[in-house]
Image 1: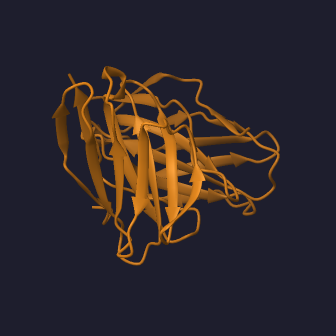
Image 2: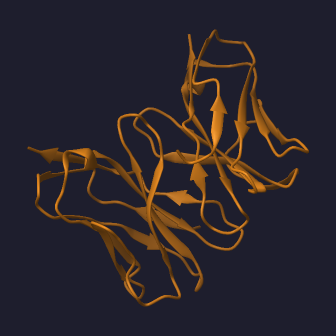
Image 3: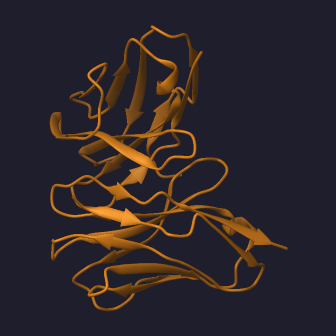
Length: 111
Length: 113
């Protein structure tokens, strides 16, 4: 158990809909990272927050947005969902150094 | 841009034997970190081992060790005394400065009883 929690575990929704994925980092970690892992693909970095502020942005679509709240939990919002958005979405947290600890992931299925 | 290459999409090893997974990376940074992550069928990403580039000594964690060749930009993972529970996808990853964690495409390891 990495100490990072993600909810929900599974999410099934229809095209065009909007969903919110939630992540709680390990106690004391200020950084939260979001990654997308499509079927048989490696992990693609989406976005990083550090202590409430956006720190780095990767290949995140404009339909996707994220935020980190004062209690350090983070939410990833995915809107106007397409079939290609079906993937495993990971949240990772870190203390500001280089190590990142991953949550169990949220499996999103868009039908 | 930094890249991480895992040239072996699939590997297999007999139980109790040793296997080495390869990873090369490309960077112009002098200070960086390298990691191996394990992703079993549960899909959880588990940090297996890490190596700081400034350290010459190869990292070791129980049955897992690395062969870090900085000049060659090579970072291989050796698993000794392989166990059935080692069967998983293994991802090599790199990070430096303010860059995000960059992953290779992974190597699927099968362990044969």
